[in-house]
Image 1 (cartoon, rainbow, N blue to C red):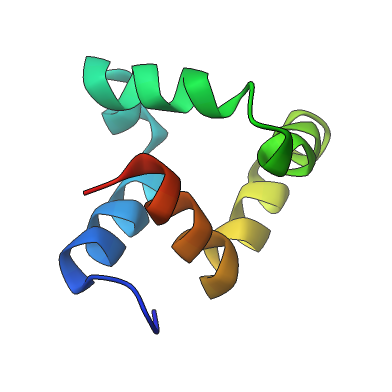
Image 2 (image 1 turned 90 degrees about the vertical axis):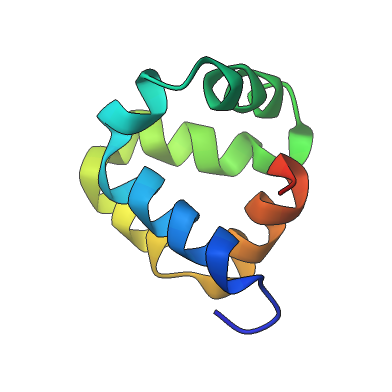
Length: 75
């Protein structure tokens, strides 16, 4: 993913492809809860609620979204 730290890009791919891994990581889970309050991610959460896995895959394949998510989550 252009403009993204390769290690972070790989971590994002793993997290998005295995949501259970996120649930087992309290620190990442807390950061994701904070993102639920972020207006920049309102569309993501809304689509995820209604579109499920299809919506998740849309964002998983969006380098701009993943870069923004990476920036918000930090290293």
